Image 1: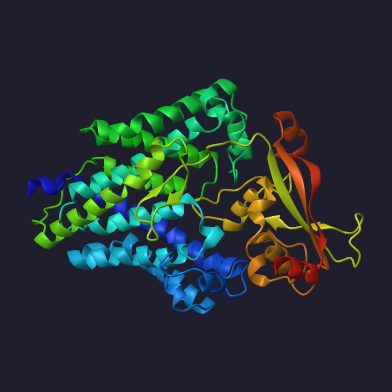
Image 2 (image 1 turned 45 degrees about the vertical axis):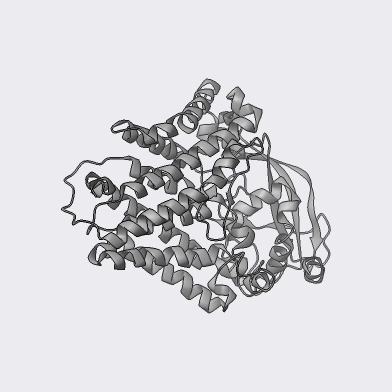
Length: 474
């Protein structure tokens, strides 16, 4: 069945698989290093509490059967080990069925984590990694040529990622249609990177050109993914360049990198194809059956895309096989940040010695220049950005965070850049205040060395001690 195999895409498959394995590795590493404070037995949103009220059929996960922090840690580190093995190319040493089973392992491992991750794992790139990871199981190894249908299904995912994001922008904030969103976006995005300040200060005509180029890449170029070569390669390459531009301008976890990896199947990379054997019949039948299932399930995101009430980042099945994506349907004009402080004083007066907690990625001290963390995902920092937008985003976990800070909880403090208190001397009170942040000008940067200027807005959480927080979060 010559139509089944794409013999000239052997190198394309290799690059895609190694890139996907690298993203898997980063995802499992973040889970292993952050889970205890976020959703461990004493975490802010404990997994045991979640699985007790969530039916298995709605969120299938091994943690419905058993949970302990040690078991979760072993699960996440096992994901790191399998991802590293795939990155090293172990799948190419196995028979076809063995390679497929090996690729199935990280998908199953990560599915169990995402389905109990609650708010911490509510980001669109979690479902994207699972959708892409499931399809990668059927891409095969160098024992057979890549199946044409799988390569096109990967392009179909990329089409939905880009076109869906383009539609949500055009239907959402008017600034996208006016080409003015980037007047604000680099300053108000969830987690600025080390170059975001400079991107913000680019001339406004260039910002408008950036938005226009974004619309072209997301609304026109996706259709070219399904055209003959070399047009499809040009389309995929343009998407990769656009994503690299986003990598430079901010910290978006692994969203940009998984999108770059997803664009690779559109490329026909140079190099001699491997000498594949004919694919076994069972493999052809399995691939075609899975393709038919995924195409059938795709009617959900298609209906969502053409709907005037299009939603972003939603999964339509508990296995995250087919999902809808999108980002920044609206852009904030003003940046707010929640600043958390504590004091050792026994009375929480305004003139007490309030000391600020410093987070790793989110803006805090105006003199601290943002650092590059992506593709690593700082989940608490991202949720703090949402908390600043509205207290409603913080209702399930913010009280627990304050309680852990009052206890000097070691796992929670590991998520921060710095605690102002020694390990054996926790604060008596903590509080949270809302500030408005803006980038400094070139002149202000030269004079003060600060990249941010902040102004106090209002109290976010009044001074609270341990008993009060415990009562609030119960």
